[in-house]
Image (cartoon, rainbow, N blue to C red; front, side):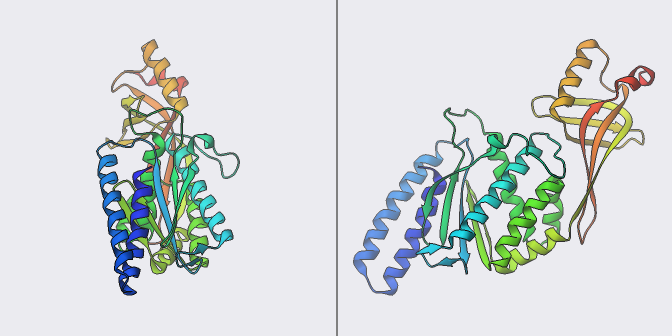
Length: 313
């Protein structure tokens, strides 16, 4: 059993205990206390053993939910599929893929989460990354789930700066998935709580409406551009680059898999060295929020081989 499932169950038991107290039911309170104690012991045991796969619990409240009895099936289906769509698109971006305005999402099968438990209280679903092998390190999907949780929180935050910062990782298709997800929640007057590892966020109706308006009023402009400057380095494992532009400013960002392969060929040939002048192909993405400053991000997509001989020192 995952920590998220136990924490979700703990929340439900706590609600039942509060209800038992309100009805002056000492036996019910005692049973809840015993269960809470055993849950806390199990959580402590599991937290001492790091979980490297993605797992979280989504709790829905508001009009689509009737106490601890149930949740409207149509809403639950659309909300869960909308969340999975958001995770899949964020995962493809995290792995360095450039997605078109429409079409198949790259590596979608690697981003699938499974519903492994249902928790009552406000109505919750526990979702886990399921694979046959144990992981020695955190999986990319776990990193993506953390990022998406932060984006959901920042979108509804009282502080505009929080959303500005987290929006740097968005692209147009992920932004569209966010629009649809928050639109589904807002139009149904739902609330959302996410429990993910040590992180927990709660968005009430006011925060969800704010998030929907922010996302709908955010634009992203993307273009391919060739930039000249000095190559400072690339880390193939983490797929990150550093590049000094002609004006002396240094830009950093992710690298596509194709660019990593090209980089390895060039360095093996001795054609690309530290601080050598070169021309690179970039995906330049500018996030334009309704308020605040626009932010520009760069993704290295390739090296202009034809330009290298002329630009080297």
